[in-house]
Amino acid sequence: MASIAVRRGISALSRKGRQFSTVLVANEEFPGLPDTTPETANATSASVTKLSSGLTVVSEDASSTSTVTMTFPKGGSGSEQFDEQGAALINKCLAFNSGSGLSTVMILRSIENEGAIPFASVDRDFATVGYTVEPDNAQGLIPLLATDCTFEKWDVRDAKILAAYQAAQANKIAQEVLTEQIYAAAYGAQSPMGRPLYCTDAGAYEIASFRTRAYGLDGAILTATGIKDHATFCSNVEELFSEAPAGSSDAAAEFAYIGGEARIPAPIEYAHLAIAFGSDASTPLRNVLKHCFSIAGKEGGVSGFATKGLVGVYGGAVGEGVGALDSAITEALTSKLTADTINKAKTAAKAEALFGMDCGSKGLAATMTASVMESGSFSNATALAAEYDVLSESDVNGAIAAALKSNPSLAAIGDISDVPYQGTFATRF
Image (cartoon, rainbow, N blue to C red; front, side, top):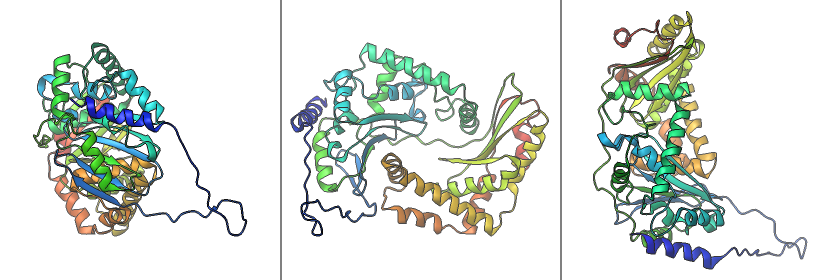
């Protein structure tokens, strides 16, 4: 159990209290006033260390705010076993609930006392829990990211209610439903990657079984921004997590892309349509493809998308406009790309990636985590930009050609009577 380590961390916070001090440095031009000369800013630089527990720690030293996240690569719905459907979403809703000898109230009070903002997220690939706080208060709350959940009846009840609410809200958003259906088409409705993320069917035993297996240190990634001393930080983390759950040592599951179709007719005038292809390209290359498709499909109202293992396009139309959308989608995917289009796509993809780093410590932490998950390392913004700059026209055209060779996946919802079937699209690429 992690109760000793967690209590030690909480006790340290209590002893520290809320004391602040200001050091004034004399201003030579105006004696008696503090020196207001700003310190030289450091470029974001990250360090990565893998601990003996199997936990990877990545931190950077330049942010003025700390976001600390724990990402569990086996915590996404793609890791659910057949009878665990819904366990990933419900466990996300159990974040910061009772565990390791601490009640939900005490955990939330500790977070509030430190002025931290907690958050949790889940998708098919992984789950993340974390918080944003002043750097001075960042380390004391770390044990709360790996508490040994005790699954109190009232916590599980409330988590299932929250998960059901989130599922109901997602089902009201056409793009969320379309996303669910494109995964079903791409991986098969019986595959964990193809089954719905927004589900609450799992029972108490399955919820606990999933968490025990997926929410452990082995294979997880702890990311922190605004940490000045990486080595000391790693040492503190190792001590604070000395009794945290280890989880399963198995690697995160991998699923083969198959391609197919998922159609949901609905009594609305609008038709939503997405076409996806399998892609094993790197994240920077997939992001460039997304923007290439968006540029090529702009006039027809078609936008590109990219996620792990998939690239494609989507759009919507009313009534007779479905035929025009069909043509626009085909043109966006098959148009010969000019050098100017590829350069614009590279610039847009790079700007998007860099903005993700620069929009706050939470975005930076997410970028660092994603990089470590894919490549095992992360250095700085310059290196990230270089991953886009180095891509050539032949890289982009080759990745598109390779993707279009895969069996296309079609997702359609709404008034889909005029939407061609997947087999029709398959003959075009």
